[in-house]
Image (cartoon, rainbow, N blue to C red; front, top):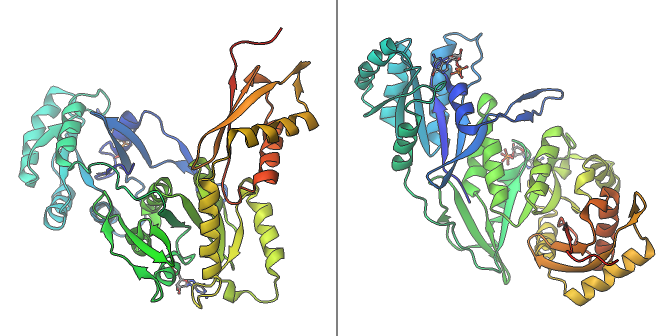
Length: 440
Ligand code: GDP
Ligand code: GDP
């Protein structure tokens, strides 16, 4: 489900990170594209009154630019106006009202159609409380005094946000046979060029229908009898504009597009090869259980390298996506694209492939007979298997003791299933469950 995005905007030191941590609970580290760089994760999710929200801490001011604080705070606010569903403008009761607050408030008031909630932080002493009424002068309506450290006022502020963000209603429904396709990858790998190619003259664009959030637009298209919807086309086309410190919007957007898709095209730049960032995005697709095709784009720029060699290098580097086919494209010339859409079709079928219980148990039995598994002298006994879900294929294996299963054995079983049924392009989930009655 796409969650409304709330961006916390404000000067340095007003307490954005403190508030973020209070709402998210924990701060997870993310590994950046730059090798060796780990930095705090700048977005997280929380729920309030039964609704989930994505929260963005827009910190990260770079101190050595001319007039850095004003310009960069303004820039954050601008990005938030473009990308978020609501803005939480945070000021500081300790400092009182400052010129920068005025400036940013004016920009928000003039240019934003998004809901804005004004909170004045550090209102945790009698003297500081007295400072909060002056913030009405910003013309942003109600002022919410809060203390991010102690928690005072935070609930009222969240209620105000909750009220201000229109209910997005349920998830948009696409029919069962529509393939939801997401194109993901780092900036400049060619996502919007590929999108344009795919939606080119020879395809029928049915009609762009708005997604659940204001700025997420999906584009349905048809190819012969096959029906697709390209997830977050607007985001792909706009993401190029977003640079530098505000790349968290790009990451968040990719995450949401992946969540809503069946099949993901992970674009890799042929000239640059697979980067850490590509792996991270690939990991997101895997964790979400989506079908995946690795697409090496800008192949027109590569000369004298054989495709199968290049594909092998890609596979060696992104080992965990061993099930994902590697395809080659040039969004510039259009080469490779029909083949990729054929592969999407195959992967989508595999992602939704249901194997009958009889057949499944036959294969599992053969696998176990060929290579029984013991752990600390105890034999793993798999009584029966059933595929209880698809998208991705999810198999429950009822056994004497799930603790006996070693990762390598799980892998072995997965490989046996792949050898029998193919499952190209889709992850398979195995869930080991204990059968209550154990044989003596
Ligand atoms: P950011 O730069 O906007 O992310 O601000 P930080 O979250 O890093 O906070 C800046 C400073 O303000 C830190 O020393 C915090 O401990 C302090 N601070 C944050 N929230 C509160 C609050 O509610 N009350 C008080 N007294 N101090 C706070
Ligand atoms: P995005 O940021 O991932 O959406 O990337 P764009 O589609 O905006 O492409 C970034 C740049 O790469 C643009 O200058 C494109 O013209 C160029 N580009 C995209 N695909 C290809 C390709 O297949 N071959 C070549 N040579 N250039 C490409």
